[in-house]
Figure 1 (tube, rainbow, N blue to C red):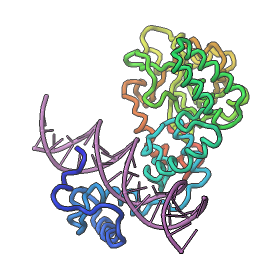
Figure 2: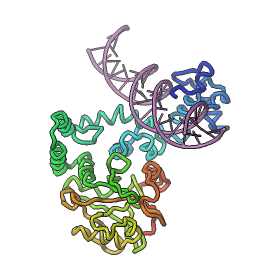
Figure 3: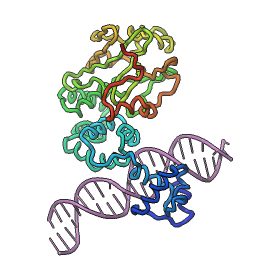
Figure 4: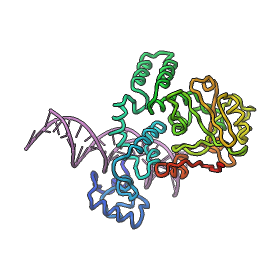
Length: 339
DNA sequence: AAGATCTACAACCGCAGCCAC
DNA sequence: TGTGGCTGCGGTTGTAGATCT
């Protein structure tokens, strides 16, 4: 582990790359492709290890790299994605064409972090710093009811919020009301991402103002699964309150949209349905969310959510999504049979 | 003008996961 | 099943230029 085996074979150069080295590497990869990185330095005539060559290519020499400063749009997207993904730089970079994980990581550490702190926002939690301090105090004091107090302060902050940070914060408040169950095992768990369902790009614009949000599902016909359209996440997610599942068998109601309608909407007095579309009003201060367990899963054409393990990272990297990043801002659903 | 400090970002390091054997 | 090679990721360090004192 650690130093790559090829680095022991001979004295390798380290440090900054010279223009001559860049040229050798660029010429070699342009002609032959990189193939096995460990063999690249020898074939390209470089006194570097393969790992160093790979890094230089990926972060600097690749022809598809975008140069120059980050735009405000890119910056905002990074902040939003970081709120969802945390320090998963490679996944964040996958949503910003022409940018590398290293570049984004550096930009975050050198610029965005500072800006957020100046605005009183904790860059790690995306919450107001004062609240983070409060939480730390609670933890230090070892109060048994710290979680309750924390939720109360979150509610207060959410109601008063208008900034994007507070919108994100409200999302977390809202999403913390969910427990997520694996529909195959039936075990409750948080999804395999930092505690968030990827809702931040949905219709959350007014969340901070009135502590409610709407999640729109495309309901085309009785055989079509609901899907969520998002510029950050695309594809069908199924959300339902398990409290009203028609049977103990969690798979029995998977395929029918009717059950979704029944379970999802009948419990929610503020939902609407107008044929081809339906939206659910989600009230963050509604006991509906306090008392229900939600399950979620990736829908496939013939499968049940949970039959295939849901891999967030892979899903984020699908072409469906990549086609809908900054290069293409128009909404486009994975199962785009809408109307 | 010169040394100190700051800033941005390039590059390295250690680790984990995957795969072939 | 264990081992070693390879790749990719995220944290950290190094370095050069800019700015400050």
